[in-house]
Length: 255
Image 1 (cartoon, rainbow, N blue to C red):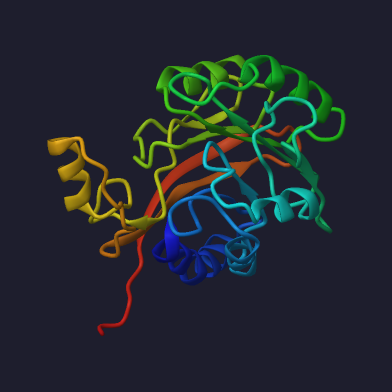
Image 2: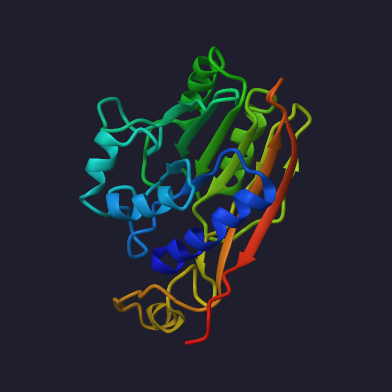
């Protein structure tokens, strides 16, 4: 979420990679550019910090420069359930020396969200296709409704390694591994300033609710946290063995 979130990624992701011997890092980067959208420059900061794949959601089109990422960056994903012909791609298989292939799918929900194609049917078809190459599959389900995220993960239990929700900027406490071996977290939360309303300065949003008048929603700056989840996956069968929420503060030097 804006420059505070990018600072947290730059400073904390390398340490997390080292401390936990992480093999792969996925970040939803759709609010990295000033809190709305993403650009090649902000995506470059995330990749340089150790992010291996960037997913997105309903703020995909907020910055016109995103077209360059959609057309030229294979590590950058937009929701798979956009109509045929939309620039970019919604899934990818990543291969690293000494590691089995890992697939990432980006989906967007439809409840209280911009109308896209049905993510459930797209998920079924895409998972079936990708399982011809790997049984390690991670899904970012970018959605508002908890029921939609849970239902999709339940439908895919045993077919994918993990389903982690994004979008609400509020980390949920329901991390679990379903009976078929699929790790699930309804929402990963957000990386940015938490002395805020979902990463924005508090007072303008209160005034918007009080008056209904337009306000400028500045990106907040205080109490920066990196939020997400650590997931351990069995290389052989693709089943998740552990999921752990993380909410790590960024400790910055005093001004």
